[in-house]
Image 1: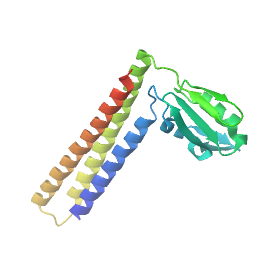
Image 2: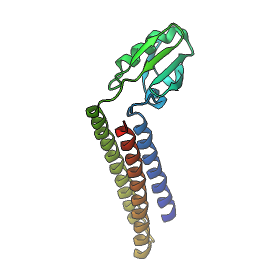
Image 3: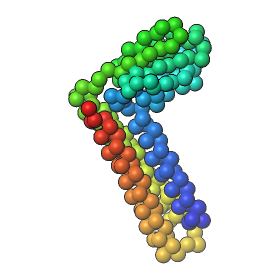
Image 4: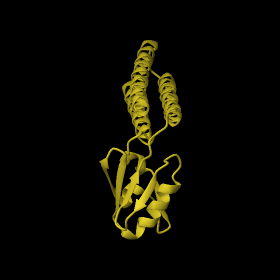
Length: 183
């Protein structure tokens, strides 16, 4: 029973770290990253649909992204969704078949702003991991027919897992910070 709880805690912590890493991908760097555009919702025949489901995204150059819609009728809606997406700052150009999006250079001030956003996301991840730890420990303490030694050992193992996952999150944060501040 304790082993199941520890396995569940580890799995939830892994998911929390993965979610935050995915979230980091949505923060723009100087390069055009297709992951940045995946969460843009396009009004496709009255239904908000993720851009990744409506078009192919290609990255031919560092600051240029080519969006090729599967349905040419969605070109105008895709273009409008990109223009209205907050904090993107990109201007799409439509040639009737594809949309080209050129990302502007980031200013030093904007880069620092993005670093703050990434740090806030990382802190949210740490809080989520600590909440998972707290719930795991309370679940173990609530188990009947377990000795104090077993509970203590399990708590130490959960603390170790917590430390590992927070370190993984911090490593991802350092990489993203370096990427953002790279000129």
